[in-house]
Structures are given as structure tokens and as C-alpha cells.
Length: 229
Image (tube, rainbow, N blue to C red; front, top):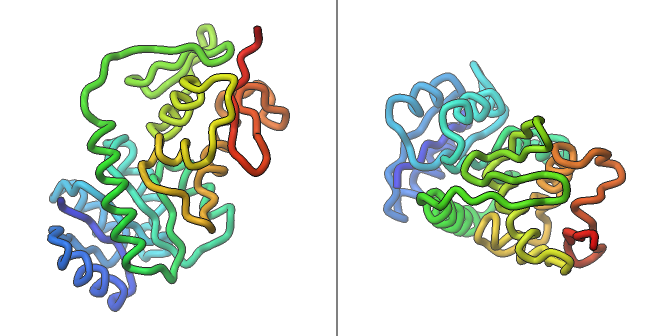
């Protein structure tokens, strides 16, 4: 697998290259955002690791541009910016994960493997089946939902979350179940990745995201899609 690393700190960049090369990956290293985007188009990597605060073009802009061309390539932010708003912005741009610095190389390796494995599995051709979700119809292969004539764009992760909730309608779906369905790896104790995806998803599909009716929170456990009978 070919991994693009965009990181302006030379020591961190080289450390990542050395550590991941030992895992057998092919590495492409870029010192700034513009160089990262050039490498992305030229070298066609399978996985992208992005710092956020880079010269020339920040990681958010790079991710946004990558997602214009490719919805499915795994993108993970590695950043010293650890405020919730930073994570939310990164996930809303389509990142698959957001890892705060400093991080352990063993955790990073594990996340790369599991995210890549799940993406390869989910990117295989699937039947273009749709399913109802409240007053919406979800179209997985089109990465969208429709409410009447209104089309709502969804990310791959969001479709997987909705599919898991629909498959377990009227039941509590644990956080671990949703993580496994959408990412394929276990919940990390300090991660708010799932909550941030749910928050963004509610803003897209709920008529009033401050009083959600489709995705209900079950405090301390997970979420539930309650079907009215």
C-alpha cells in the first residue's frame, strides 16, 4: 500500500517514514500542502496522512481538494490542534479519522491497517439497494439520501452509520457496533469521532438537529433509530 505523508516538521515526517517503511508500506513524503496535492495527483497513493498546520496550503484545504476527486481514499488527520471544533471541521471535510499529537506509533499503525482494510472491503462493488430511514430514502451507492425532491449528500461513513442503525431499528446500537460498522476498529477511550459524525449527520438529515427524531441518543450506551408504528 502506498501512503502519502504531508507533514511540515522534518523530524516527525522522517520518523513516520521510517516507522511505516518497516511495516512494508511505500511512502511518499511532502513538506507542505501544495507539495502534498501535487504528489497526490502524480503518485496516486492509497492512503493519506495529513498534518493541518502546513505552509502553502493547510491540511483542511488539501483534504477538501482530495475529496473533490476521490470520495473513498482513506484520509487521516495528524494534528496538534486538539479542540473539538478542529476535529469536527476535519470530519465534516470527509476525513476518516483525526489523531491528536503526540500519538503512539503502535496506535497509528493499528488505525492505518484497520481503516485501510475496512475501506477496501466497503469499496468493493455492492448492489445499489436503497432503504428507508424515517421520511428519507437512503441510496448507499450514490452516497446520498432523498426527502421528496430534496437530495442530501452523505459521506461513506455516514451511510454506513445509517445502514447499521436501520439494520437494528428499534434497538439500542452500541458505540462499539457503530464503530465496527463504519470504521472496523474498536473504540479508543478518548476519541469523540463517532459523536462528531453523528452530530454532523443530524445536521444533514434531521428537520431540527437540536431535537433529533431519527437518531436518538441512548446515554452511556449508544444510539437508536426508532421506527414509529
